[in-house]
Each structure stands twice: as C-alpha cells, then as structure tokens.
Image 1 (tube, rainbow, N blue to C red):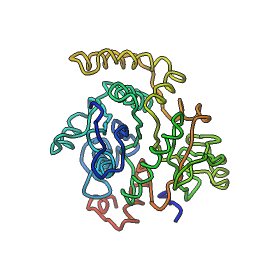
Image 2: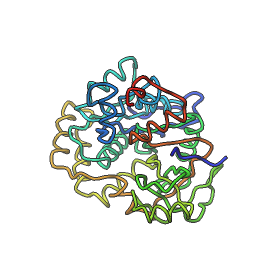
Image 3: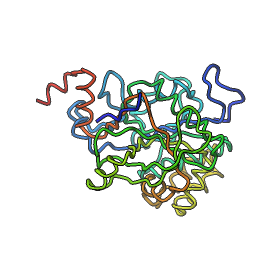
Image 4: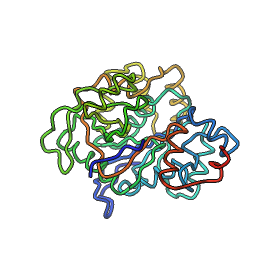
Length: 326
C-alpha cells in the first residue's frame, strides 16, 4: 500500500525564492531496467520500455514526475540524472524541450545502484566539494510534491549540524511488506528541527516475512530509498565498503570535463563490481545512518504491476490500457 505519513560549477548565490542554499544537489536515479514491470510496460507501449520513461499514473512519465517534483526546491542546474547509455534515446525525448536541462550521467554498463550513486557523488564533489546531495529513485508515487520536497529540504538542512550522517527518509508502513527495506528507529538526535530525526538501530533490506511482521509491529519505517548526505561522506562510504569500485571511480577525476571523460568512464565500468547501494553500504553503515519520518504525504514505490494498479484505483484513474488487461 501507499506509505502514509502521520497527520555544473557551483552557483554563486541562492536560487531566488527556493530556500535551498547553493550546495544542495539532487541525484535522480533513472537507469533501471524495470524488469518486474516489463510485462506491463510492454502491454502499454508495445515495447520493453524502461518504467521510468512510461506514463503509468497519469499523462507524464515517472521520470518527468520526479524531475518536476525535484524542481519545486532544487533547480535543474543542480540536478543530475544518472541513466544508462542504452537508454539515451528515451532520455533525449524526455528532455527535448528543456534548455538548459539537468546534468546527465550516462553509465556505459549496469553495475547496480551503488555505482550509480557513487558515480554521481564523485562527479558532484569534483564540481562542488561542499555539496550535500539527495538521491531520489524515479519510480515513486508521491501525493503532494510540495510537502515531500519540504521534507527533502529539511533533511538536507539537518546535514549542517550532522555533516557525517547519511539521512534516510522513512515512510509509515501500512502492512508488513517484504519487498521494501525497513528502518528500526533509535533515539532522537538533538537539534532535529521541525521533524524529528532518529538514529538508525538497524537497516534491513527486503527481510523475510516473519521479520517484516515483527518490524511492522515494532514501529519500524519503510525505506523510501530517498536519502541525503554530503558528497564527501558518500565517497568515503564507497571507499570503506566498496574499495574496488571506489578506486575505479576515483580515477575519473583526472578526466572529468575533458574530451576523454567518456573513454575513462567506459574503462572504469569495464570490470567494476556490481553492487546494490542499500545492501553494500546502508546495511553495513548503521552507526552513520539517521532517519526522518515522511509525514502528511502519501508515498509508494511503483516497482510492481500490483502497486501501479492499486495506485490507479486509489486515484480513480482508469486509462484505456488498464481496461484492456481484463
């Protein structure tokens, strides 16, 4: 079910009216293949279109919805879309009317979410050593973009007083779902701001049903996979837990912004290890994690056909392709 909440070079000045200072960046992950939704997107489009480029919950693609959500508080000049080179034609069509649009990092191979997150962290830190970034998947439903981005901005601001932390955004669960990551809450951190921020006792990615049942009863939160941290902190986490991948990405610094950047990127990915960021880093980094509860806004990961259809039912939307499913 939808998670329900309780009632370029660094820019030189603040974005007018945004309330977000110069060093805040957004990283939108848009390189997934959407394997679990492949049957649905093939039904809708007649091709194996990656889900982020599909309009499943309205007239706009999931990626377009994500970019518009981010733009409520973070400008395109500090937004980075991480995708796959093989998906370049889809992304080009998505961004064809934007000038200037967000920065785009095209990975030559799929090496998992760890490579996508850490590539963006290295790329952004090279341009803005003080960068604080928020990472957002591009396959989520959010009922209210403004409220959601207020939480994102507050998480970024918490990093001012907790610069060593990686701060997760956690959703209030409706059921003991085994397909989400779960976050067990510890003590409240001092100076959290309007929304409390908690230490993370434990992070569990996609637990067995019995464990999910207990986590649900104990008041744990769903991991929305939205998190924030300083670019330097994320780079350090990669160095500690994925040293081989880190070494490959660190070598890119010499080539960034040159005519050899794409060649260096292909070399870095050639034999890079595949890793999931949640399992490889977050589960092993609990002492550095914190979490803020996402409140007053409905949220859902649209990773499966069941969740897409449930969302459409709750929104009262009946596209033609849904009726054709029978």
